[in-house]
Length: 489
Length: 98
Image (cartoon, rainbow over all chains, first blue to last red; front, side, top):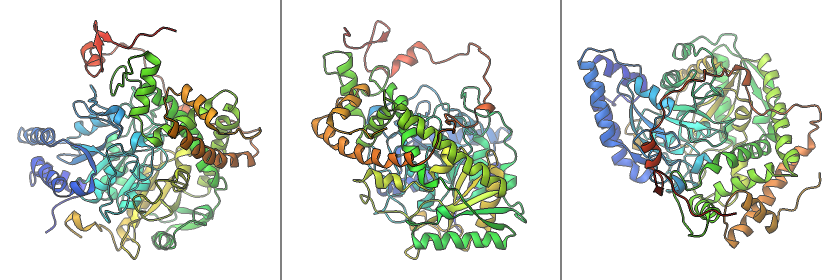
């Protein structure tokens, strides 16, 4: 009898008393203790904190109080999400030892729903990367094959869920940092509509793109976590004032007559043959489920990488100006003056990819180059948005691969930043357009590596996206497949 | 506009604007890497964007402003608790003379 490992199953059992929050937490901590030495998904395991919190949930039940929708559910948080009293480094040496004096809004909402935070997960430094090799504290390994990357930048959160160290986790997605690692680790990962989930307390990378979203072992679990963290927050000026709706109820909804767009540009040169085969097989099942498939054109797709790496680095160069060694974090005092201290601190505190992006972002914003690069990229962003505006009038969702290849080997692309950037081609357009998108597992490759189906939908229409994901998940013959270290198959 | 030459001088200029004290080896490395990345970005020039408005932000029309109210924030002690150096109840920095 496999232990209950899905979000909704744990919550129901804890609510009914069949399982205690403490037991669910101990199980997660035991799985971390057994396998995280190898995987390195966590930067900080909050053992005592989690046990104390779990006992508080159990006491609440013992008092006869109603428990929340994530009753006793262990959750791992990407280390870019601020947690009061727990370290939050964003994978950077410049924030080593930093302990925020406040919780991010998403953390407050998780705690109000009776979830148990079990730790902070490893990530590419400041969420800049697609392989987790840019973490200042060493890379995460893919639980399916520890010689391979779990993807990035939320690779620790993805790996923790894949290895069943937690049934769910939060990540953040700026250009694919939830969907790509979800695809590479065989987990469900959602990037919500821009503004759907409050960013208050998320250490910023590129503010016009960053979104927090969930990972989970199944679609329904991801939908539940998303519904808990979604909704307007007055402390985030970019948070949308729009009703969330019944996201979990959308799972299982009929797809009869739903129009699914298949963009040629996402099945082009560079796509791995086995990934294509797996994704197309999943799309055929959607047709069998009653969907109408239509070829669509998203003609500016190829320009997404150039557009993104101008806009995201420009925003990053501004956001990361705050790390100056004055108020918190690392300080390298050269003993001379303030400017020398800034320069020495930032040179020692930031890793190569972060410096590369700060330099590129500062360059595209600098006098003489602003119009040619930054403004130009903002205009092309408009063209990319229009591609989706037009297509999403003809179809209800767009389906594609989430990543052109399965998990690549650690070290394979680390010396070629441009090759690493080009790997994000399928996830960047939805980020630039601000629309919701997710990755849901489909059949693995013959060598057993996970593949993800990406589903993109209209702004604020996470419900339709989840309906499609759950319909495919129900028909997926390899549903629930987990790596050997997860302890079940 | 003609493509700029990404060389050591440009990297040093941008590094100064970014408050980054780079080593010589870093300057060389970033000059060659940034040249390749900027060359890729130049493909945007192929698109005619003369009448296209820029997108700074999506969904801006759905973002209401909140009331301007005074709410509790972090305390003075909490704000200083993580500072590398504190003097006279404030953040201490090296001497700054321009």
